[in-house]
Length: 100
Image (cartoon, rainbow, N blue to C red; front, side):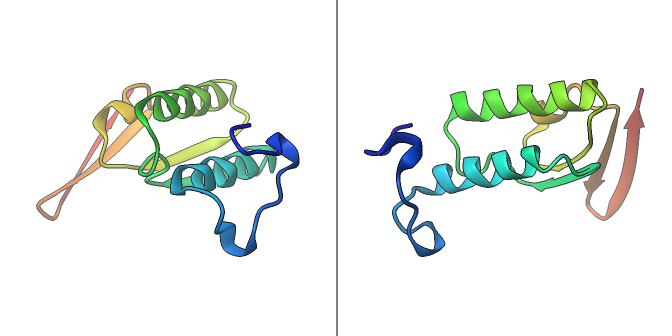
């Protein structure tokens, strides 16, 4: 919506006219709209501002809660996993599994 043509704005080859955060939000929206049974996300919020990151984490939590998808989230941000059913940590080569 922040682009000059709003949702009708053309996107150049490889998203050259988009910021990293805009590209990331578009990719995530496409993934969520695909309704794939499993969603694997690697550092989904790395290029986003704090508010966008919070919105995405809430949306992912809601999708997982509604059981519409299995969400596998790879992240360095601990708070993004606060509501996860299971968290797998890799710490100095050791794997630890925490779950409800």
